[in-house]
Image (cartoon, rainbow, N blue to C red; front, side, top):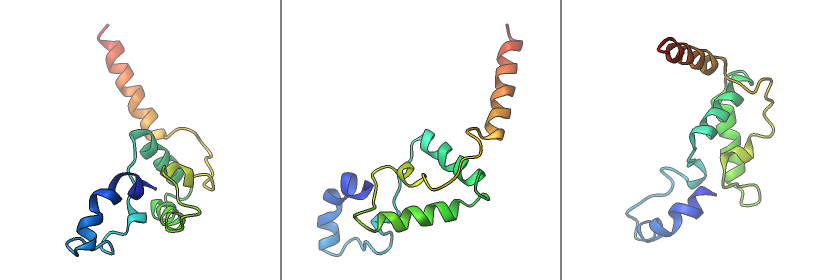
Length: 105
């Protein structure tokens, strides 16, 4: 889980002396996403009724149990169906960009 890998050691002292309250933002609610992971999250939401909330709630639920927690959020995406491997709006913007580049040559 991201918290244990990156933050736990750094914040343990502040948590133990009470200067940080871990209940404000529970560790299982922290996700660090790469651009590719963010695109995969968007793709999961796009292919599943546009619900980022459902996907993130499921990941939070899984991360709150040490047996099902995962270092990468994408490990929690397996239950979400991907009808398409592409986000149409990204493809449209990429096509516009390629057209602009080609027009300069």
